[in-house]
Length: 363
Image (tube, helix red, strand yellow):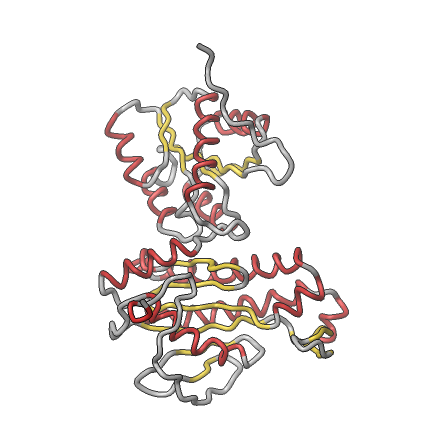
């Protein structure tokens, strides 16, 4: 009986899947690079754990081939570190080892690897497993196709897990100001660049803070709700610092998205939602912090409702700012360049959960 045909190699139109090969063995990395490129992949190389983690966070690959034996760490530890990051938690990882031992295979799978191959490498088997892993990832995961960040299903699961565990945490909702005017002025491709820039600034700020606080690395999460909306889940004590860093990074980088004349002006010409001509400032990021430090929330819909009440207020500033929920007192805008002003919070009425769910009181 003839073999079943494997999925067609990724040689069609569109970007090629990007593979990161992490291996320091003489000749093998270059051999794998040549083989994978011949079969339609874009390949980058790393030869130690530190360089691999840096490269994969700066430019997340679509899949990773990871050798167990590295000069500065072992593949199991590196795999676990990758799985703790928001960017790499869903990326398929195939581990390689020279030891055909059941215990090593189990250790790799428990560290978070999706598959395991022993050396010498059967390249056809490796290719088939890579193709299967990529296809499975696209089908099963809800990662946003533009930013590769976890989507709504993962966000909901993460929030429910922390609520069920009664963990103290904060949720930061991020949205872009003046994004529609920018999209109208420059088009959707430039708009996608703005969304990717926002994602990069959020991830770099959060991952940087997490790296400085090793005791709470597993408590940091970044998700992409869709469009220009993002969510960060993190320890409440780090929420304000993270927001300040997001604002600093985004405001420093966003002028580069504009043409030279618009950069000189500091604004663009456009039309508001009523069709009237208006000058629009540069895109800013509006952030809302909702904390569950006192464990008063029991359902994600309640958190979303509080954030919705504050979101329009945060966006009213037109520039980058963040707003904290202070139910025991006033809710106030907080930004490095803006003075705080008090506002009475909206009534604690539950609205529909943004991701299509309802809170218990809405059922």
